[in-house]
Length: 72
Length: 307
Image (cartoon, rainbow over all chains, first blue to last red; front, side, top):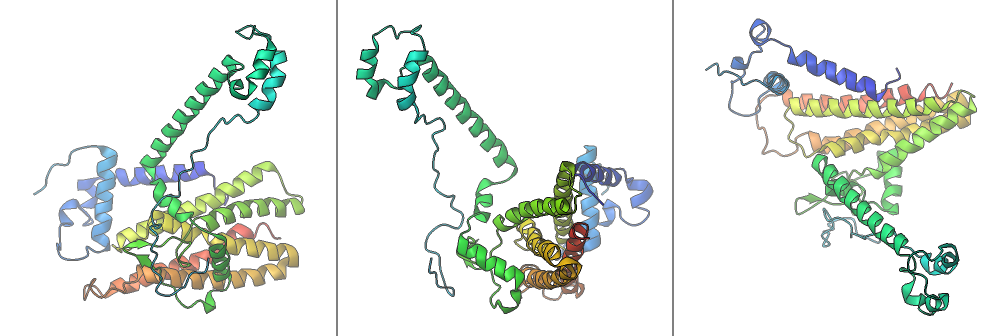
């Protein structure tokens, strides 16, 4: 497996793109990974799932450049 | 260079201070005094050197730089351009990474490098693995042998590339593209490993003081093991290769586990007291996974060099 830097950049772009196209309503909420389900324990450490959901949400926010409507 | 080891408090503020800025004079023309005499004959007096040459030679001690005003002006213009370029480059680079922090990692000396190499190859007798601090800033590698540095990984990386070229040349499989491919493959694996480590540290909310450069340093220490393995493989054939692989893998795994254990696993009891019994286990998994990944990557990157 001979990597080049270009293949690394390609892989990174494809991964970020894959995270960016995850749809909020159709997919993430269905499997319980929506943004409204992540505001849970304000206590100590968030836990892996909440961190992952935050990460997905921040990647999507940065890549899409939209203003998210509040779902409160 | 005779520093006591225990309880050493660095009184010199060298932890984050940059090394003294020696401003290099870029175009210091030390040859002008010698060549001005010669070039007087060549540069026909088209400017203002219609004056008799005896006048020039009389004041040659002072007027060497002005013997040829065009060259002098060009020299000053060039040096000002170079200074501007240097400032611009420094400004752009300091936007991405702080150069001071980078300088901290390169503040090494010979004694540190020798001790560190010995620890990398034989870590079983090293007693104290704590990174010492001095008023909240970590000590430089010159003063603390446990501090990570970037000098050894950089040198080991370059040596590995050269050694790979040599190994391929011995087997008559060398071509210049292979060298670049080997270099970029190794670099990509480092980047992948550092990114995976950063991601896992972020997901598990490990509040350690491991910066990106620290992770690059710890990932780069495996190149020392790789060099040792390839050398033994070249010298002693396939058996020597596997023996050296086993030795350096065990040593590197021990080194990584002991070094990262201090940083990742919670030793401060004021941290998460009772939340989540899964936490210490997951942190342990990260450390062990990092350690296990090293021999795999050593084997992957060196086996094709030693057939």
